[in-house]
Length: 92
Image (cartoon, rainbow, N blue to C red):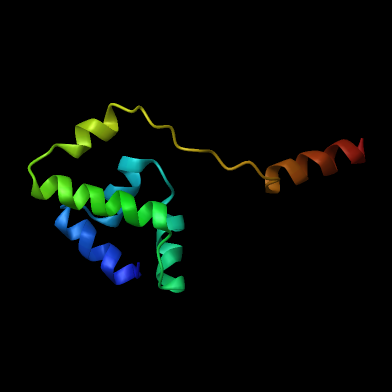
């Protein structure tokens, strides 16, 4: 699915990209990165299509998704603070 088609589905679901990412607990940067690729992964496209259809049918998908109690994943990489901490330990 193209990014443009994805954005149309979000409109049909009455969602913006920030609201969509907050609802499904993913980084807005990740979704915006698909704009450069001009293509959206199948899983994200499927979710958007379901939200659009459910909204059209009058189904409250927001409550359904919120009830899942999804958790936003935290970054797990060596950041600047870890590197700085390591350098401080080496200096001692």
